[in-house]
Image (cartoon, rainbow, N blue to C red; front, side, top):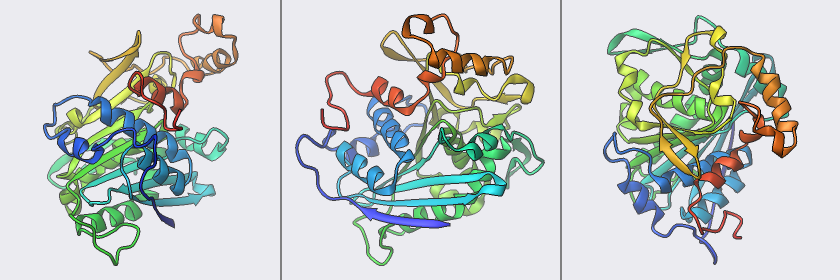
Length: 334
C-alpha cells in the first residue's frame, strides 16, 4: 500500500470560492433526511473529480474551495493480476473538525479498471452486519478494490478522531473529527457507497459511522443487489446520487448481470436544475446499449440527442459544471 501526505496553505484572490466553508458543512446534514445541500454537492463533486489526480492537486482544489491549510493523504494499492487499481484521498480541515474521503473512479485508459467494473460476482462479495443475520450482496470488483485500501483509509480517519493531523500524526490539530463526508465519481461513487455501508458492517467503526454526514456520488454504477436488508436501508437518506441525463454509467451493470439497484436518494439534472427523482435509474436491458453510447460520444453534437445514452456525459467535469452556482468562477479562477 502506498501512502502520500501533503498539506496546503492559505488562499490568495480570487479564492476561496466559499468563505466559512468548514462551518457551512459542519452545519449541513445534521438531520439524515435533510436532502442534498447545493454547497456540499458542488464541493464534493469537485473533490471527486480531482480524485483522478495526485494528492497535491486534491489538496490545492480543496484549499481553493475553502478548506484552507488542509492535510491530504493519498492511499493507493495496485495488484494487476487481481484487477485492483484502488486510490482514495482523505482530507482534513485545519481545525480537525471536518474530514472528507474521496475515491478515485474508473480511469479511462486503465483496462484493469474496466475488468474490475465487469466482475460482478463472487461468493465473497457480501457485506454482513454484526447485529443482523441478513447480508447484502454487492458488486465483487468494487468490493475488492475498496478492501484493498480500507485499512489505510480507516487508520487515517482514526487519527483524525484522536485530534491528530492525518499528514503528521505526531502533531495535534484543534479538535477531533466531528463530521465526515464521503464522495466519488463513477467507480469512485460505488466505492464511496460501499465504504459507508462497511462502516455499519463492523462494530469497530461505529465511532466513525456516527460522524458520517452524507455520501455524495456522481455518475456512479449500481453497487448493491436487491433485496436490501433493513440495516443497510438506514443509510438511504444519507446517500445522495447525482445523475446527468443520458449518462450511461448509472444504468450499469446491465439487468442480465444480476439484481443490482441503486441505494439512496437520486437527483437528476434537467432543464438547468437538479431535481429529486421519484425513482432510481434502472439498469439497461441489453449490453447493446454500451456500444451505442460510445457511438453517441463520437457523434456530432446535433445527432447526439437521438441516442438514449452517451458516454460523453459521464466525465466528472460535466457534473462539476452542472453543480457550480450560477455566476461563480470555476476552480481554475476564471
